[in-house]
Image (cartoon, rainbow, N blue to C red):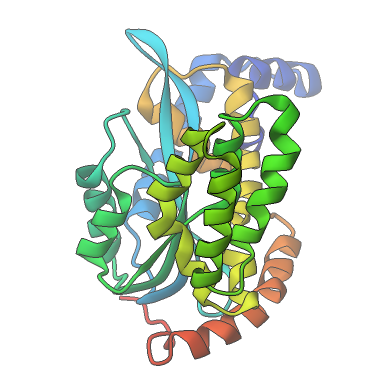
Length: 301
């Protein structure tokens, strides 16, 4: 039942499957009672001790439909870290209510610090409101990096379809520049060409510059892994598959339970873990040089 639920089957579908395959008459309520047992495991997982330092933490969100009087979209945030050994570690999940800001993120990062995370070298996100200020409060030396892919995607929303390719092409020299100074020059050229027609794009990049530019100071191996939240997308895809099958959830806990079960069913063969570790070998060597003295062996409390 837990495996089927983690794959996104509704309780009604699980009940029908058990009846068809095994001839077992199991009610939806019984299935709910059984799957609710995982909540204890989720609480333990969400409060487990964490490593002292992480090279990179990715923060992203997926929207789920929750009935709270009426059905509405609610974000569920996911924090995924890369360990010093190059493995993937999901640090936790948190439900949002749409009022996220510095206060919300301060509570999330304080929770992670209380679980043992003393330092994060880089944190990659999609320009989440209030996040940079909260990071600076908890981990003052952490470099916050905006996802370049999301920044480009958000830029295209302001652009007429016939100009999509042209604008995307002209933005590329900005985020692939060899240095921040060179990127500034390329952005001025972009602004001169497109500023009159698409001032909203210029404002978007200007407002995001402080969180966009940091990765330009690093080795190409680091750039490749921190310029976007793509590293977390495969995890999100698995979660979305489970979430879509449910339609909407009766409560926040039901949504969190579904996400948690989907996370626990990731990579059952371990092949993904091995590929992940190999992919991070070169970037971690570059991190050792760029952040000398901070990327030390982890210890858990």
